[in-house]
Image (cartoon, helix red, strand yellow):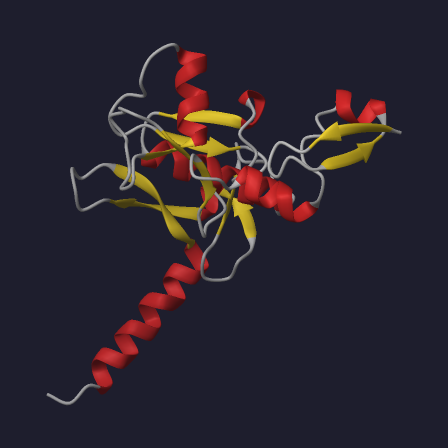
Length: 182
């Protein structure tokens, strides 16, 4: 084992040389590691996102903090993220801000699409041909869903309920409308 100086408290710690090469050997104890990682310039919020203090940034939060994943994506792109862009964590770990774990989404709709496709994959379906019905929670083919019109723009989209659940919903709705007092 080799000795090293703790970057948080200045104390002496011991570790194996191979661990130092892997990034260990920074702090002497778990409590010093927490203090070192969550110091004044770096903190982790309640949702698990890592925030870094920066001097000037267009996406600055109160206290001059910016999400670390935003800074990592911007460094890879070579410029600031466009307005409305979002970052998706592929492995769903909000503190894992490696380049290979981040996906830049052009807007919130694309980010939601990625999550919907991941839910279908996790349930054992193919996101190119399957969809999950929110009423019965079953994986069904996309042709088993009725196309519906969105209120904004009138675009045709695939509905959230399969045809059989949508029909049952309409029957139940008509039955309750008949029972309402006039």
